[in-house]
Length: 139
Image (cartoon, rainbow, N blue to C red):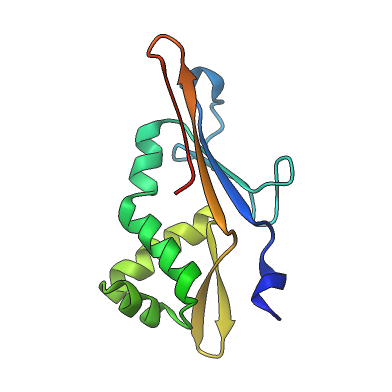
């Protein structure tokens, strides 16, 4: 199957919600949809706070996602080589990203190839009119 056929959507939207807007049914501070589920036809991740977002989508993780998208490495070992990092640490990061639905693993014989579901990652943050700030970014 071609990689383009595997991709569900071209954009993943990541939102941060204030605690007053968030419900108590969130596990570990992160609410995710199952792979393939969408809100308004766009896969979505939601975090309870900016800190939760920043702890999950660190610059190293964003670099890893971009390397997978750009290089399309055939295995976890090759992914670690591409980003010049320890295989064990990369495997742990990839496992966390897979739990969130940001990537998935395609089985290829004995290898697991990480695949990114989207072409663009859009991060939106709530607007605080008293602070006069808002943030929306597409890394």
